[in-house]
Length: 413
Ligand SMILES: [Zn+2]
Image (cartoon, rainbow, N blue to C red; front, side, top):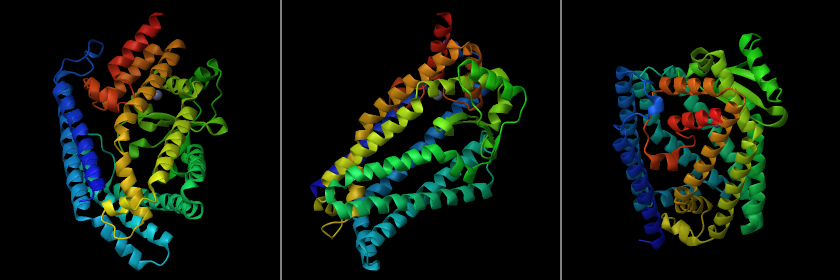
């Protein structure tokens, strides 16, 4: 067995072990008493339901991880990817066409493997706990649309990166980064115009009490927001949300219709002032820059390895060089870096959340924000006692109890 393959398998097992340990820790923590600030959030019946929901989700996550691990190990040990690489090379004339056929098959097979899990999650778990609003027709249409979208966008990006590589050799990474950066910026500006309408309807928020309240609160903070939209989140789920996208002229506030249903005007305004806090601190722009830097680092490391024939051989390839196999081997070799990067990125994100909360509290929306967050959390049966290690590793937001305590101390100052 090639040494590199042994290293790759070790990394796959390491990731499996880390995520299993985290899930196990979370399970152990579940029966802990509810933090003081959250007492009374659930009555006894609802808390039992919440515990069952968390347990059911953990079980599905566990099965999915095991199935994925077994499939990955079988693929690696049998050299199935190398076989697919040889086969697609036989079918196609150009190297670019081979690459696209290879990744097309890879993407479709990956989607088919994850499909039973998302189906079960939507129509068994979410249905049982009263969250699901998706019809089967919507589910299949959405799945198909996401796959086509991924094949199209992924195909275009992959082609450009490959062509740069084939003309420039290993110095392609710099130009490829620029192309990816343009891609990322374009989609953060036009996401709401181009992608969201494929899955949801958005319409401008009508004139009325809510719109006036939002505009007034925003102007108090020195913002003028004209683009306030309502999205039919209820098409998919009862779970509610609000977000802010784009920057500059393209900035837009999107409220789920479910949020408007579940929260009072004051609470919605408070949630939005939190979003404005992100905008004020330029969190959207910082996130975009951070993802571009990550892409650059990935491409640079990949450029150092891409021509090494051992990468292809490790995955069972018979050719001395296959861009497709090198790319997959690289992503498997690079993935443990996430174990280091995830806590850092999530730590930064949690700091941004605290700051956005503090901003809302500073403008007098602390109390409404607390009651809004409590309602949203109770309505989604969220876990009130996650293990600190899980929060540290996986949570992009502080826990509800942490947020409430921070907002309360902000208010007292
Ligand atoms: Zn936030």
